[in-house]
Structures are given as C-alpha cells and as structure tokens.
Amino acid sequence: MAAVLMLSGSCAMATSGGGGGGEGGGGAAAVVNREADRALALFREGDYARAIKVMGAVLERLPEDRKGEGNYIIGSSRLRTGDYEAGREFSLVALSKYYKGETTLWGDREKVRTLAATDLSYHASDKGDYEIIGRVEGIVGEDIKLDRVLVREPNGVLAGRTRLSSILSFYKARALKNAKKAQEALALLKTMAFDTGKIFVDGKVTGLTEAVEKLTAEVAAMAARFFFRAVLRPLRGSALSYRL
Image (cartoon, rainbow, N blue to C red):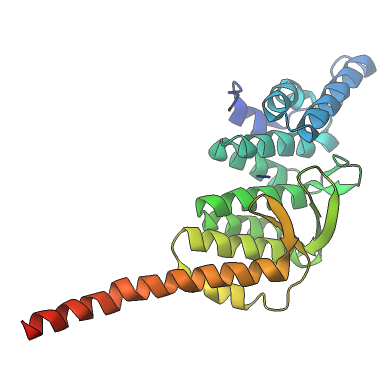
C-alpha cells in the first residue's frame, strides 16, 4: 500500500472544503477536473509525490462531489510516502466531511470512505495506532457491516471483495499487536474465526482466514514471551536465591 513532498498549507487545504464547481466559468472548471484526473493517474502509477503536488494545487477549487476523492488521494499518498500524521488528517477529512463521496480511481465506482478507511487503518496498524482505527469504526458506524472493500493487488488488479468490518478488525488486531497489547489482540482475533475474503497485508494480498491464523500465531508467541518475562523469569530468580 504499503520522499515526502511538503505542501504549503496542507492541513488548511484538507479542512477547507470551500466552494466547488469551478472559478470563472466552465473553462476553469474543466481545467481543474483535468488536473484532478492527472493526479489520479499519477497515483495509479505510484508517483505519490507528484500526485500530492498536482491534487494539492486544485483541491480547494474542486467541485464538491470530487473533494472527498481529492482529500483521499493526498491522504493516501502521504501515508504511502511515510508522512503518517498529515496522511491521517487528510484521510479523516475524506471520511468524515465527504462521507458520501465516490471515485472511479481504479475503473470501478467505489466509495471514498471504504478506500480512506482501509488505507488509513492499514498504515495505523503499522504504527500500533489502534485508537485511530477505533475512530474510523465510529465514523462509518452501521455501514461497517454493509460496505464491501474492493481489495486490490499493488498494481490495482481486483483480487476480491471483503466486508469493511473484517478489514478494520484485522488491522485493529495488528495495531494492538504492534502496540504490545497481546491479550486484546487475541480477543479480537477470536471474533474473526469465521470471517472470509481477501486482505492486503505485508505488501501483498492474501486470504483473510490465512492472515488471521498467521497473526494469531504471532500474537500468541508474543503473549508467551511476555508471560515468561513477567512471571516465570522472576520465579526462577527467586528459587535460585532461595537455594543460595
């Protein structure tokens, strides 16, 4: 999804949402839409730094029905280039302020919220930021059970469709693991025993069942190490002291 180009006034741009539709008539609006389409093409090519620059230049002038898409492109590009904090803020704007936005980024019509929720939660899981995934779950509300994520290979090829609730639960468990909260992660993974579909993790698409099994084994091993350090090792030391 898995160099950061700084964009002046980025947070203000993300939250502004001022008048859409084009300035000074249809010609200017057409130029803005063309530039937005160019940013989408750059994103698909993996040129995230240029996608940020091109979309950032027109974001405030986009029509309202494309502002969610614009914030998503900048947010996801920043996440993918390592600027987690800025990427998180743009993604949250796409999720909350433009909740009903849609895009044809990869050819199929998709909800911007499912793209933004998935990308943000994936990168949050790397950081151990389970709280932001909880915030994403709160924003999507009941739609978490209804929305389907179009899971794609890194080149954009569609690999399958998975419930948004399953995607977010898996990434939250992964975030809990990376935050060293093994018991909480194991408890969440147990609720996913019958979840199916595909998921993007560790740079590739894999079956959700296999991903859950692998993550469960990793977290269980972590929990065992924590138990040894917290309980068994001190007991061994006490027994040795007693014998001495």
